[in-house]
Image (tube, rainbow, N blue to C red; front, side, top):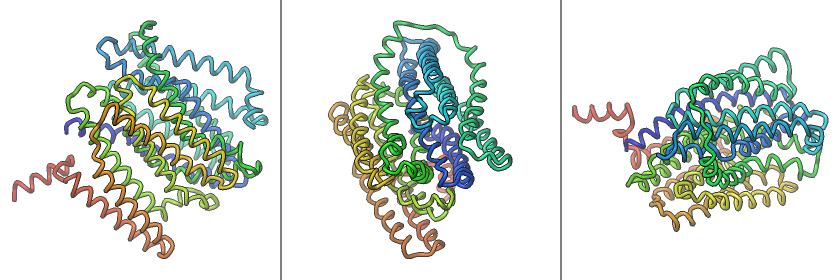
Length: 487
């Protein structure tokens, strides 16, 4: 229970930077969708280029974030030596990447459809390079269990980014997508400077022998990461390439990209959970009760993601105002995208069995299988079904990887997941979601919100009754137990 409380506390802190930060970034969605008209396709351009940068970031970090945790927790290695060696790898990859981009910018920009705006790619190349270099110090903060420092730097970037966007778009009237990328570059460079003092405190030592062990461990994670990120961004990369109407491709992609922002609550929860959970998993790998801990963590992860799912679906009549009116025609895909994000979170939880036994190649195969399914669905169905194919492709891709990981994992390293309880929660969520969707066709907005809130509260009451008694909740639990003793 102590470890679960620690997980909950760290998840809350990491979640502050992730969830609150993403929420604040939502303020940019109405800003962009108001000042960048749908017909311009600028929001689609932003969605497309950010998809490429997400993929490149995985390539540049080379799976070294997880590798750092694995080897920094090994008694045979000194954490600073691990950090130094990892930074040498990422720094070298980043330098080569920048030289290639700036040296070959003309053919690269032409092949990606940005021949008239190579500056977009140059700015984002520098951004992704700095992000890759920042990723390792951020991971080291997590290893050192310094969530406050981690969250503060993340929030600094977000607040600065939002402030500059408001100044440029609202006050100065600079509404081109160019300024989206330019502001990102300024903010990323600014945050990078805050890591410089920490780097001088490190005892730098490169270990060639350790590097060989790290690369052996990390290359399957790289494949896993590539496949995993492709599951998230492949639709946004593929869409302009296969959509039959070139003039409308970025317009439709802009609609999809803006609506997906609402569904990203699942990605926020998964990311916050991962930041807190990953260091604990490796630290707890030698404990006798590790299997029960992993099973409980999976259950509570699903409970809270399903609750979040119901909140987003139930309060959609309000959340829809996050995006501009002319982009709202794509809101119906939001529940589908959230289901895919939940599957991704489950897959992440299932992934630790092969990471802990140094068989990360399994994760690579599972993710590649899911990625192949996603690509197939997108390529085959985008021409006819537009962004609906993107949404269902995510479900198919993540579902494939999730099922494969569970089946093989239970054979190789079985964990007693509470399948009965999980099935009940999924069933309740499905029924409540169906009621909410049906009600949206017949009830006025105020009645929808009232009824939907009732179903959300009912779900929460079931959670409290069965799996989260008030006596075990921090702060509230002390008050509850005190009253119980007085009575």
